[in-house]
Length: 218
Image 1 (spheres, helix red, strand yellow):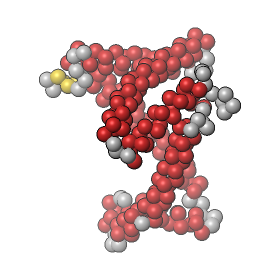
Image 2 (image 1 turned 135 degrees about the horizontal axis):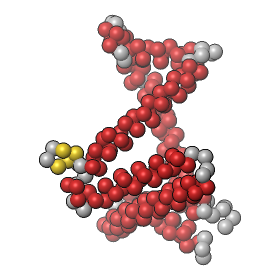
Image 3 (image 1 turned 180 degrees about the vertical axis):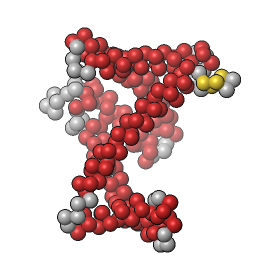
Image 4 (image 1 turned 90 degrees about the vertical axis):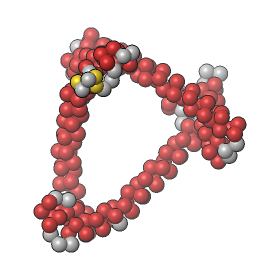
């Protein structure tokens, strides 16, 4: 029963939206709407469980002085400060989430002056990895790599002011983005959608049980 009940609940929760989508009967629509509201409640408990898990894992890392434990202190401090300001702002303390009389609240100030710069720094670091990957990909060892390199150079050149001033370059850039690039993106999206549908069927039918902490034979 320990393994069967979660599988039954997963099957029911996965089948109801599918039936409501292909057979929009009023009863099924109401059931699907009620299931969506229950799902929001489950999300709230999942967030709480995630916070508890983060706190437990990082406090253990700090207690054992594992590698990177000072970063765990920073993480817990940020979680406490931002979470505390957010909870207090939700009750109207400090004036809410955004601004009061044109001045940012503590939550908004931390978001604008701490979170956003850190986020920008993290994404800026990805530029170095993208440059390294581009250098490896643009080695014209065969025809496909050569075409990739030429099209990438044209697109990058056509996206800067100097390239936009050259005749026909912006037009070629837009053609590359709207035709070969769009076709490749559609193929990737179709493949990802088929993979997501396949995984959803595996979960609904009980074939994939890793999300429940169960093996295939349990």
